[in-house]
Image 1 (tube, rainbow, N blue to C red):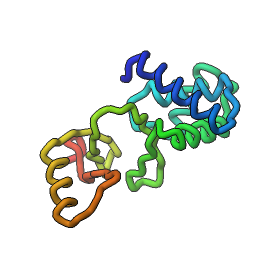
Image 2 (cartoon, rainbow, N blue to C red):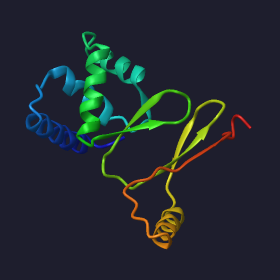
Image 3 (cartoon, rainbow, N blue to C red):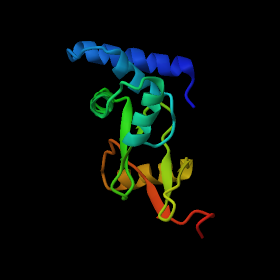
Length: 147
């Protein structure tokens, strides 16, 4: 879980972005942003909506979708698609890059970091004269529980 001070800093970034984009600050948008930025999971829209409604039952789906778009445009969340037709959201909190293992049976998602993989990817890009702006590494298979 991200620290409260980290989430507060990201909320300030969001508010700065919203002011510069001429977007209205609302309590419900800020609530949805806190739910997303305070959870380091790979949350689906329905999960974000349910968590926000536990705090304020007046939050609607449209507020969640609009807030997620704003968070993405502000560079504060990343959209993830793992081949099951669902979009997940993960906060971009400036932590180390990580990749994902995805179980094709139970849909469990495991994050991992590998300096060796990162170094090899950079080496391959250099060998081909390629400048990498971003990447994602996803491995699909069966988790230990589903094997």
